[in-house]
Image (cartoon, rainbow, N blue to C red; front, side):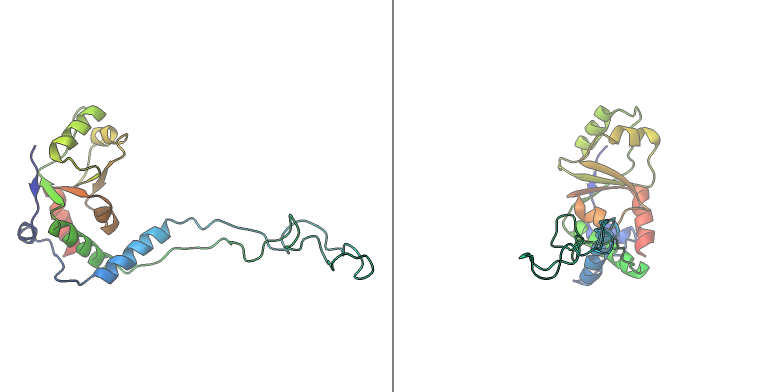
Length: 202
């Protein structure tokens, strides 16, 4: 199995809609920020002085003891008291319009094709489902340390052979996004997947 570098001319012949000039950089930035923000759980939470356990009784008299004035042991200055301006449970998710996502995908794809980082192959599959066979197949295509393989679909045996290989990721053409394309130095796309990507960028 041999791989061919996908040039700008070849991509246009495959009806892949590329970005001209520097258009789309802001869309790409906004989309990447949204992807990363949407992965944040936002479940860090601290209790303020009204939520921690403990009595609100005044600990000692206001005057005459020689101690500083203190109204409650739930005060933030006490160990075990409330937390001031601590993190609260919140939603970090950001919504991005579909048009911006499409522009970001086109921009990332254009940048990778311009860099010569995208290879095309007819198909990709590992028939025996063995990790050793998967590594051999990938090494025959590229020597990059991290590789993204985009296919229309992958059978169960191919997924099984790839699950223990950390530096190679399999992703379908319907699920690949701008972050995938920029995260891996080498992108390998099957012919059928390229048709799907062309439809998504149209």
